[in-house]
Image (cartoon, rainbow, N blue to C red; front, side, top):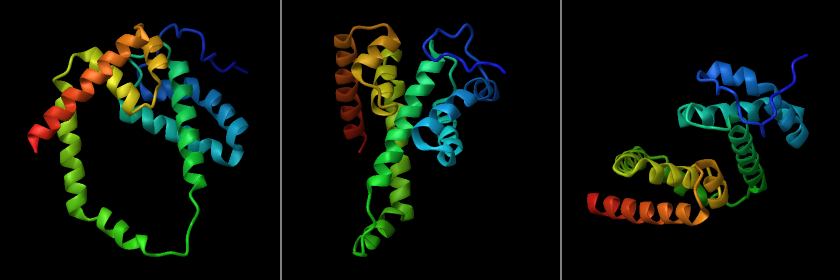
Amino acid sequence: MQQPPNPFVRDPEPPGEAPAWMAQYGPALRAYFRKKAGAAEAEDLVQDVFVAMQARGGVEDIEHVGRYLFRVAANVLARRAGADRLKPTDDLSGLEALIDELSPERALIAKDTLERLIASLRTLPPRAAQAFILHRFEEMSYGEIAAHMGLSVRSVESHIKRTLDRVLAQMGAAQ
């Protein structure tokens, strides 16, 4: 039986295609989730990790794929735990707000906002955009980003602050 990869050892060659890294890291992720959330949830959680990685565009630019995937896995668990804490209520007054949130107009506004954000991020220096994306969308801490990108925490802070200022200015000007 093949040993699952050690997520803390630098990968010799990160797998480029989704099926390859799913095959390589799937068993270790399943074991991790079985231990943390139980066997019944493990497969769904593994799929959530792979969906997040597909949405990210793969792992080609990640130096330590195993570590990164397990960080995403921890984020998936945290989000799931947060969702489980939400208690259903007998108060149905929030349904009208939900219907409004699901309206085609709101979906169009959200799509437009996301397109403007992406366009704004494309105008940034690559390292600044990467630091911003890792912090805001991958929920990595400044220290984790610094280690991942080979920068100081101070540099990461600076990149994210300047990026946020620039994106907010561009998004505000586009309205």
